[in-house]
Structure formats: C-alpha cells, structure tokens
Amino acid sequence: MTVKIAVLGGTGLIGSQVVKIVQAAGHEAVPVSLSTGVDLLTGQGLDEALTGAEVVVNLTNSPTFDDASPAFFQTTMDNLLAAAGRAGVGHAVVLSIVGVDQVPDLAYYRAKVLQEDILKAGPVPYSIVRATQFFEFVEAILSWTADDTTVRLPSTPVQPMAAADVAQAVADVSMGAPLQGIRNVAGPDVFALDELGRITLAARGDQRTVTTDSAGMFAAVPGDALIAPAGAVIAPTAYREWLGRQS
Image 1 (cartoon, one colour):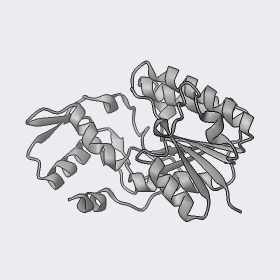
Image 2: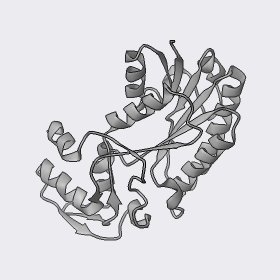
Image 3: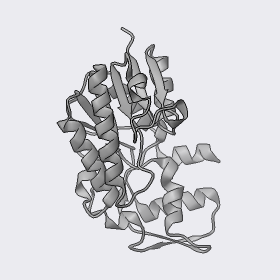
Image 4: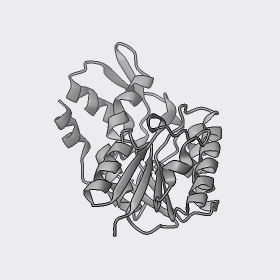
C-alpha cells in the first residue's frame, strides 16, 4: 500500500535524502519547507501540506543553539501537532539526538528534550529517532574552537554517523508502524573528539595541531552520554571510509 509521507525540512541535508529513499520504496514523499511555502513557526501552509498525509516527519531545526531554541521547538511542535490532528495524520516522526536527556547543561539539548516531550504528550502516534553527531558536521565542530594554528577539543567520547545512514534510519521508521518510543542509531566506531579532530585534519592535509582542552559545546557533555546505548541500531558507514570518499 502506498503511503503519503510529508517531510518537513524535506529540502535539507537529511530531509532531501529521506524523500528519495521513501520515493524509491514506492511511497509518496512530499518535501515541505519554507521554500515550498510552509512556515512551521507561523503555521502558514501547514494544513495544505498535510492534506492526505498518513505520516509526517519533522526534520526542521532551530536556527540557534542558545536559549531561544526552546521557544522554537515549543511553537513549531504545537503548530505541527495541531495541524496533524486536523488532517488525521496517523504517525509523527521526529529526529533527535542520542543522549539528549543526559546533557542538561546545554540549552539546545534541553530544547530537543522539550520537543520530544511535546510529541510524546500529543494526540498523534509517534516515533523518535535519536541519532549521534553527523560526519558532515565534524569540520564545523572543529571550527568552533580553532585558530590559524590550533584546534582545541575536549576528549568527549562520540560515535558519529553518516548523514546518509541517518536518513535511512528516519525513512525506515517513517515507513513503519509508530514506535511509541525511541530508536537510537549510531555509527560503528567510538572516538574521543580530540582524536576525531586529529584524524580529520590528517586526512585533509591540514597542518594545525589539535590540543586537548575543555573548549566548545561538547565539553559540557558528561561521560558517555553521546555513545549509543544498548539496543541501538549501528549504521554501516565508518568515518575513515567516509573521509576517504570526500577527497
């Protein structure tokens, strides 16, 4: 049976790949974003976008990682669930972060927990996909605490994964029955973040030095919070393999 799946954020890094995977599986995937005339913050165009949809996938993200992010998720989730209820949507899927509820010192992580809680308490059957950090964002993470000669990174353990594997996980869940719970997904390898920085710079031929330091957002992460918990789905793509394909 063909299912219509509305993908909010469907033109972005993950969303565009989810749309392709869903379509390749024989379902109807509709990308929904500001560029298609839908504003999740105001609700404009949302009712029309969800008309006839059995599933809605929310991949939209706050434009900031600071104390403004909870208001973004509160407003957008309220608008989404209200519209999904009016449209009779039977399954709502949200992409979140592995270990998100274990990092209360980060405003953005608290905001994502709020998003999850709103979804859980809402009227629509739901699934939450929690993914680890994306390979594609590693260079941005390095840039937060870098200068011309040095990159300062904490030794926080991370288990990153390819965006393509994240998209596959989201698509798989969206094409299935609501989990009424959480599916964790992660890459196959665990790294200390400073080690990951050294691997990345070496692969790029970047001569800067990585210094282990309590710098950047991930310094606030306790213990193994960002590591896949028991029962997580382990994605196939390894970081070194992915890096080799980028050069």
